[in-house]
Image 1 (cartoon, helix red, strand yellow):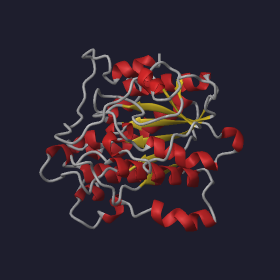
Image 2 (cartoon, rainbow, N blue to C red):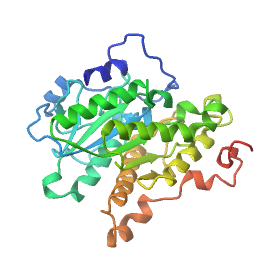
Image 3 (cartoon, rainbow, N blue to C red):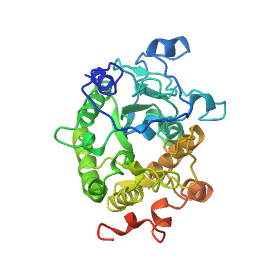
Length: 327
C-alpha cells in the first residue's frame, strides 16, 4: 500500500530501516504539516481533479527537500497552483501541493526542487493535461541499493506510488532523481556507482511500465561538500562524474547542473532558494527532453537554466574521481 512508504520513511518508526543521512548540525529545520493541517491551511485531499501527468521524485534528502521552511516567501516558488498535486500518505491527491511535499524524516521535511519543477512545466502542457501530480519516493540518507532490484525497499515504494497514481487516471511523464551523497565515503561504492545507477534507473523504468520515460538527474553539490575534511564525502567528485556519465549515455536522460547553488549552512543540503532554482533546472531539462523547449524559449532561458556542469569544471582539478578508477 501507499501508506507503506511512510512506514519506510520513518514516520511510524519500526526500527526495521536504517539510514546513513549525515546529521544536519545546527542548520534550520522545517516542520512538516499533516494532511489535517494541510486541509486547515486551505489544501484538499480530494481527487476531484486527478493529475493527468505524474512525476516520480526518487533518491534521498535533497530531492525530498531540506531547505528551511522559514525561508519561504511570496516569491519563492510562486503562489499555490491548484493544477499541481502531491500524493499523500493516505493515497489521495493533496491539492494544491505545498512544501514540504513529504516528511520522510520527522522534523526534517523542507523545501525541495519538486514543487518548483511542477510549477515550471505545467504551463507548457496541453490544456487537457495541465494537472500535474508528484509522487514522493525519497528518504534521506538512502544508499543506492535501496532503489535497486530485486530487494530495494524504495523500488517497492515506487511501484506502490505508481499504482496509486495510475488508479486515479495518471500517466508517468518523468522521473526526477537526486541521490549519491550516501555512496561517497567508500571507494568501492563510488567506483561501481555508474553501473549500479544504470541498474537502478532501469528498475524504476521497468516498475513504471514505461521503458523510455524521461529521467532528469541532478548533480551533487560537490562545490560545498567537504571532500577533504569529511570522510563521508571523500569520493563525491567520482560519484558526481558517474552521474554525469550515466546521463550522457542515455538518450532519454538529462543532467541538471548544481553550479552556483548554495547549501543551507550544513554543507550538505541545498538552501530553499537553491532547491527552488534546481527545480527550474530540472524543468528545463525535461522540457528539452520532451521537445517542448525550442526556438526563442532556448534563447530566452537556456543560458540561465543550463549553467556549466560541476562534473565538467572539476575534470582538470584535483578531483581524481572524474578520471576513472585507476587514477
